[in-house]
Image (cartoon, rainbow, N blue to C red; front, side, top):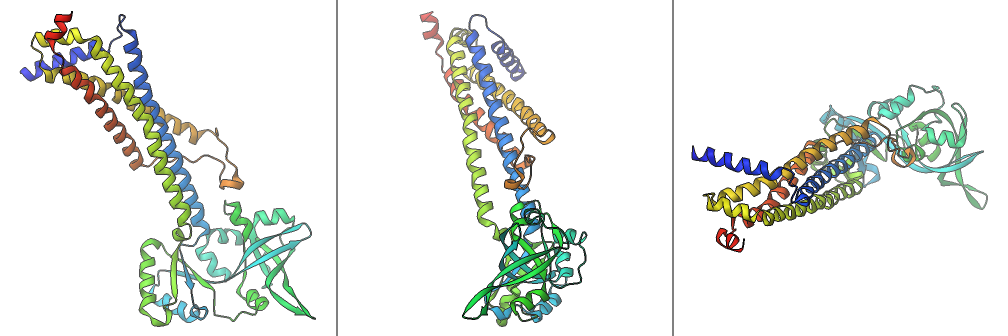
Length: 411
């Protein structure tokens, strides 16, 4: 019963202190500014983390499209052949394998040229594991020639060529002519084009047939530069594959690389940037907490006489401490709530309206991606709560240590 009376007393005093005081208007204004500072900090953190997560997710999605789940890479040239593919197919029937050749080429047309990476693939197998390639073949002219190309729409636009026309490729391997050598040249029919959403990939990737690759570069059939592998759970399957290959002495020189490993530095940099940004923006809430401390201390100093009277009339130090601690917590929690509300509205506006336009040539997308994860949201709220609660401790302790005799004697 006494506890309920104490709570009623504490709550009444808190309501009184939260009201606008004509004699001390600056204290009320300071409290409002503290609340808005906390709200601004939470809102900015939510928007920043949402944009960082959205950008990272968008890049992962687009890079995953053009980076195969798993890639088998040989150290010894003779290790990747049809025999290995046959063994892997029996051991891992759930995987899809697409062997490839690879080389660097320069394209030449009447309108200029560019450097590219040419893959020699089996079109049917490649379409099973590469959605972008599969979509490109849907608009193929179905040329019967083995010397056909599937290339990015960007290259087609820059060369001003059309489907069915020929593009000359220059290979690094040279042909002996007289007393010198000339780069090997071959004209390929443009059979189909693709658009991955990343123009940098569209500019440098080209595909042709195994047969064309073998003929032009005099490569042995059934011995490849590597194997692209589709796996539904690549992060777990990579260990299974590597362990199997290690168990066979013949294939010790072969390793499997995941798509995330091919872009490890990029994603590590983004993750580090995200953590650094979180810590820096958390300082906004810390500054707001200092405002809460100063606001509460001013309240304590201006209410010293009232605190002394309350203690004289029987209020305990714990009750006084509770009043000012809860006062700081209310300011902080309302600020967190307002900041969360504004943050959600801000994210909705950014995802709904094209306020910020991005260059597709640079980022691969034009709309600013926003995707705040539940974990980041919880960390933001918990971090704000800890800072707000901590900032309320010292003013509450200061108020509870007020000596009524000294205060009333001076008054």
